[in-house]
Amino acid sequence: MDRLARTRLLFGDDGVAKLQNATVMVVGCGAVGSFATEALARTGIGHLIVVDFDTVAPSNINRQLIATSENIGMPKVDATIARVRQISPDICVDAFNMFWDADSDLPMRPDFIIDAIDSLDSKIALYAWAQKNKIPFAASMGAARKTRPDKIRIGKLYQTSVCPLAARVRKLARAETIDDFDVVYSTETPAPITGENLREFGSVITITGTFGLFLANIAIEHILKLR
Image 1: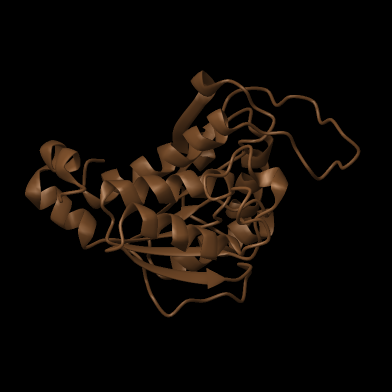
Image 2: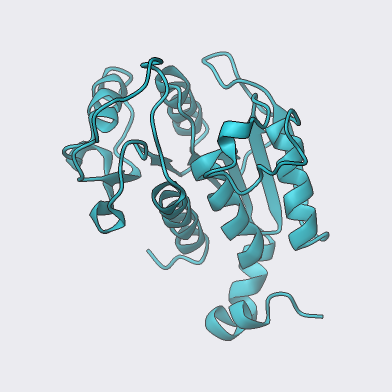
C-alpha cells in the first residue's frame, strides 16, 4: 500500500523522501492547526510535533477536524495523535500538552514551525524562540469573524492590512525585533462581535480550514524548496 502514490506522482520519489525526512511543528491543534496538521500528515511529513494545552469541547465540533462527539474532554494533543494514527501509523508524532509562553522550550528543533495559536503573547513568544533557534516559521493571523475565503491571502507580516490581529502582532513583533515572516491573513473586514462573551468570536470551518491548508502548503513548499 502506497499512501503517497498521488503525492509521489506530483513531487517524485526525491520529493517524497524530503517530506518523509522532515519535521514540522504545529503549535495550536484547533480550528486552523487541525487542518494544517492533517494536510501535513496526508502529504507525507514523516515527523510531526504538536503543541496545545486545551481539551476538546462541544463548541469545537463546528470547525476542528479532531473534535467529535466521542472525544469531548480529551486533550487536543491526544486527539491529534489519534487522528494522525488513523491517517498513517508510520508517522512519528511527538505531542506536548503545554501552553506556549516566554519560558517555553523543547528538546528538539523542527525544520519548520506553524503558528496556529490564539493568544497574542504566546505568538510573540513562539516567534522569538523560532528566531533565536533559526527555525523558519509561518503564522495564522485572524480567521474568526470572517466568511469570505476569496479574501484570504499569503504575505509578509509587515505588509499586511485590514486584519486587526495582524496589526497587534506587527506592533509587538517590531518591539521584539522579529524579522519579517510569512503569514496567512484576510483582507475581509471582520463581522461585528455578537454574544455576551466578548472574548469568544464566531468562526466557520470554510475559513479556518483554508487558513490551515494555506499554512501547511507554505511548510511543504519550504521543505521542497519550491518558494
